[in-house]
Amino acid sequence: MSDIIADIKARLNIEDVVSHYVQLKQSGKNFKGLCPFHQEKTPSFMVSPDKQIAYCFGCHKGGDAIKFIQEVEGVEFKDAVKILADKAGINMADYQFTGDNTGLKSEKNELYEMHGVALAFYEKELWNTENGAKVLEYLRRRGLTDETIRFFHFGLAPDSFDQTQLQLVKAGYSRKMIALGGLAIAKNTQADNVYDRFRARLMIPIYDSLGKIVGFGGRALKKDDQPKYLNSPDSPIYSKSEVLYGYNFAKDAIKRDDNVVLVEGYFDVIMSHQAGVTNTVATSGTALTIQQIKLIKRFTKNMVFSFDTDKAGIDAAKRGFELAQHESMNVQVITGLAVKDPADFIKEKPDEWRGLIAKSIPFMQFCIEDVIASNDTKSLQGKKKILASLMPFFHMLTSSFEKDYFVRELSQKLDIKEVVIYDEMKNRRTVEIVQNIKNTDSKAKESRKIDSMDLFLGLVFEHPVLLEENFNVIPEKMLEENEKSIYKVFKDNYNLLRAEGRRKDFLACLDGDIQQRIQMISLFVDELYAAYSEDMIKGEAKKLLDKVMKKLLNQQNREISAQIRIAEKEGDLKAAKELLEQLQKLVSS
Image (cartoon, rainbow, N blue to C red):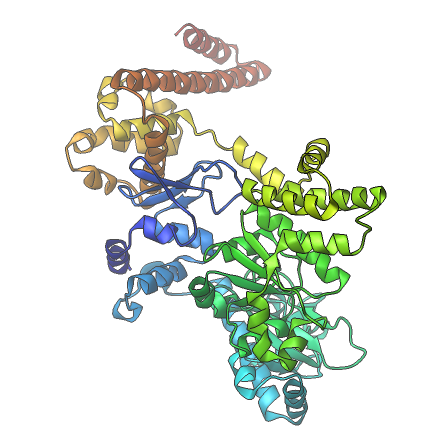
């Protein structure tokens, strides 16, 4: 495994890996950008080409290229290696995997494989049974070709309480695992209390960004069955707020076309792909979320909404716009659909679908036209109502240019001065996008502080002479075990640390996790103390050591005081006296 990791790191620079997910700007010898892991307005995510690490000093996530991919893609180590190997043009089959990557399967991998087995069963039911033939006819009537049906791996869940789970049990999966993956419902995992979740339903597999099956969408085939669409519940491999249906098929086209078409349903996506518009994805069963927008933002900042034309669809588009603005996305809206669903339009006029996308209009223009169409633009009350309806959307705009453009357009349509609209903006309270974004931001700010000992070690890594000057300041016995081991490595390998060009040799003395921790702290130190002179750095190191010593002394004070109370309670006056002397000596030191 170590060979392939070395080869990947030799071919891929960390900044090239990260730039697929984050817009980076040069900041001295490093790069800086908005963190992909939490919401922030001021960039705290740093990428160091020298150290080959990326790290956020707001939420403390990051690491080397593999750790970064694990975090941003939400995958395990081996999958992260595979992603990077593909980027580097490395064939994983040429390498031998040993150690932690053999032996027992992880729970997640077992769930992935189980969903693949379930899909094979559902596909067989669709293509090889009498009931399946009827469902295929239904799909063809909806406009799908057999090629499309096979490409998107449609299947059929039989009208049975146990056929699916029996197939999975036969394949070696426990009922507990089947219920955990959401393919069965269980009061407990005894056979008579477990039954198939999906029964008599058209099965549409849902994939994650890497193309692994993580769940299913099941469309009812019986007229009275509710709900019409039943989705897999959240599980260890599936979170509906973090998955976009069709994303695995659409990624390359999104990147190529530099935009994405966002629709609401499975069939909208599938019909759009069949019509050649392969940069189409859907939210499927949930309102658009920040996590889904971040998936899109990896490849483009341009979104085209095509939600259903009923009130619910328009409201969903407006909520999506709020979140998209928070991520500084450009949002267009498709208009001119004569039917409720994009899938129905595409079925009738597939050749016109691409044209509608090309004619999409900015979301603010759509909002202005939608509000004006349902209000009186001549009366005072009508104008006030229009302004009140549109103010939240003006507040959401992050671009001053866009705001000015649409203020001018609205002023012309209402025949009022632009300054009046700006005054209305000032007088109305800004609408918060979502409370959880605010909470995330505040939590990140609270966590920005880094421990004084960590900062000192980061300074030592960058300025080794500081260690020589402070060798005996910190008593090692007072440090916590993890700090003691790191501090000892620094002292024992001081000559290696200060030698020109020997940093990598020094880092090789550290365990992998500690190595990354030191590099990430030193990256923070680089940024924090970039403008400091040598004397200022020494002064800062002294302040940090004073804080470390104060913390250690306070901690020891508390421990001795607690021991004194115990000794007094037990009547051991001799021990209490000795501890009191220790405490007095500590306080006077």
